[in-house]
Image 1 (tube, protein in one colour):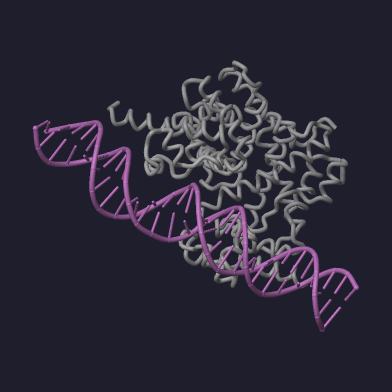
Image 2 (cartoon, chains in turn green, brown, orange, blue):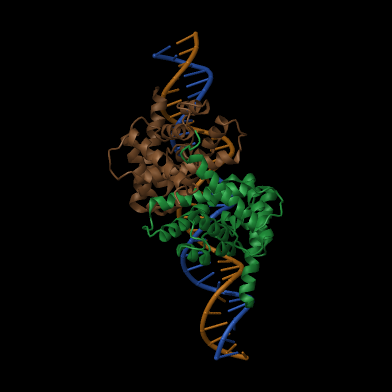
Length: 203
Length: 203
DNA sequence: TCAATAATTTCATGCCGTGCAATGTTTCTC
DNA sequence: GAGAAACATTGCACGGCATGAAATTATTGA
């Protein structure tokens, strides 16, 4: 990794860090791009070479698409052959982008904190989730040999993302849970989804 | 209805209409608030007395909360007592805001057209859906005597909204379907949801 | 070391969105 | 109907976001 690339990454991190810190400190309204740039020791114009908007710097590196490798296996019908089970595998792989779970956890906590303080950021976050959902729908459609804009696939993808949010919300704050537990929680959420709307069989 | 109120409503409609027309004609980027205001014969300053942002004028009157009356009956455990069935009733009541289904249909078509042309509007639309979803989650929680932020209720609400999108998407373009058909499609979508994730009973 | 390539900066610009004070317009009261 | 009170519209000024273009500086590779 050359010097140029390392510097760019450093600047990016510096801008993100300054944006988050200043926002939590003074509120987004009271933080100008100029201030963020100054804190990161670059010009205001440079800020916009890295981020399209002020909000972008805050939302940072939220996953935007399913993991490529896991997607391939899912589309091929693997790894187990059971739809719901394989879906969970794909979801977990797509969620855990960085190798480090602890970092991931910290990022999520930070994002939640930002959302509580600055609801204006919600639209952007929802849009990113929506993009992931679209990618997911595409994978599901492909696996089941349906057209890319298949409504049923989109429904399944949307429900799966709902389950993801549900599962994440149920993780205790500050717990040391790993991938296995996340996998379990996701399965549980999906099962619960089936129960809530499945025709009553015990009445 | 006094003259003052009628004039305000007229101005609002004029601004919305001008915004939509000009946007479809020239693209959102090339339409200034000044131009919209001029087309509606008011000052640019007045525009912001009606809408907080340019996008707001375009998204217009998308439903933002469940219908009050239907919500009350749902919370009380009615009208049928079967969760999935009552949920559909609530959803339909919340979706069909205006008495006129044809108008509603036209609005939806127009919104879809706007979304295709101007993806920048998506975040705002998603946020409105999200607000409805939150209201829905509250109603479900209340009906089942759970705390307002109950995770299971939020999961059910999210899944329900997924079904709504799915149902709406499946309505043929330009069809003359009414409330009954919408009701049926929604039930079908919810049932499909249960099937996709329910434990296999036939294998 | 020098040329090529890429990143940063400076400067200018247009538009958005808001606060404020002034001006019109509708409504209410007598 | 006249005048006061309430409300809506307008003009003006301002700060901030976001972008384009050209000049400057830093990195890379030969």
